[in-house]
Image 1: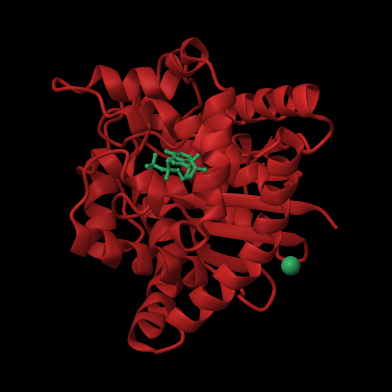
Image 2: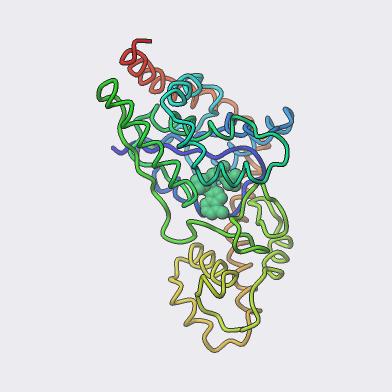
Amino acid sequence: MTVIFSGIKPSGELTLGNYLGAMAQFITYQEEEAYFCIVNQHAITVPQEAVELRLRTRSLAALYLASGLDPQKVTIFIQSEVPAHAQLAWIMMSLSQMGELERMTQYKEKAGNLHESIPAGLLMYPPFMAADILLYQADAVPVGDDQQQHLELTRTLAQRFNYRFGETFKLPVAATAKEATRVMSLQDPLKKMSKSAEDSGTILLLDSPAVVTKKIKRAVTDSENKLYYDLVNKPGISNLLSIYAAISGLSVMEIELKYQEVQGYGQFKVDLAALVVGLLAPIQAHYERIMAGSELDDILSAGAQRAALVANKNLLRAEEAMGL
Ligand code: ADP
Ligand code: NA
């Protein structure tokens, strides 16, 4: 069986980008040995309100379940409930060099946007993420395209550890989706749709049908009024086409053909909105049932216990190899 690990930060409301880039893949790995984490310790690399963070952590766990993850088949848990994550993170930070961390694209983007001082946690996020993955000896990590570089660093750190202290960690690979591996903002299609940049260009998983429809209707396109994929000259339309393809299962070419005779983008946007609403409605209904029920906390404690068994074993191996 393949070992799968992935996580999402409870740092804001989940977006359609998180779903198409990450969660939709999670569901396909349920027959494997899979660990899906709510990485709340990564959320605090930028300031968070305690009450809100706790709420969003539970809400994200409920969305994992609502999107179809079965806690009988996979392990769902909260990162801070398994202390081995922070323990191995320290080891990975000690193996990292400032230069390689400062070169990470996501760090440069996030740090560059800050006018005040830069939290050290932003820089240390990639070695912490490496620890999350290596703790389970994961073979594959289902993530969006924006995480490729962090996965590369994870392999570098695992190799460095193995080279210095003896064969200990498996080298994981990123598993990305076929379509919509990087969903862009509907208002600024050169920017990634992100929960930390929440605005009318971001579709949230819990947006109502009316809000989804309005956001798609107002999505930035171009004045050519011809529907075809061209990432350089038509980034807005190309992004909408990718989303349509990811949800419908049609190829971009099939979609272009389908709308060949249609004038303008209006009908295409109406149909895309219906697809997104159709995707989200059952997830939202399931989510409401879970939040109203009483099983969530038990699922999360059982998940943390199961994860800790594996994590502690691998942490111990690493510590012994290093002389700790
Ligand atoms: P965010 O960038 O929204 O804060 P996270 O860093 O928590 O998201 O990432 C959670 C997962 O969602 C990762 O696998 C990431 O690659 C994926 N993801 C986030 N945004 C997008 C997007 N716009 N398109 C595709 N995948 C995305
Ligand atoms: Na499984």
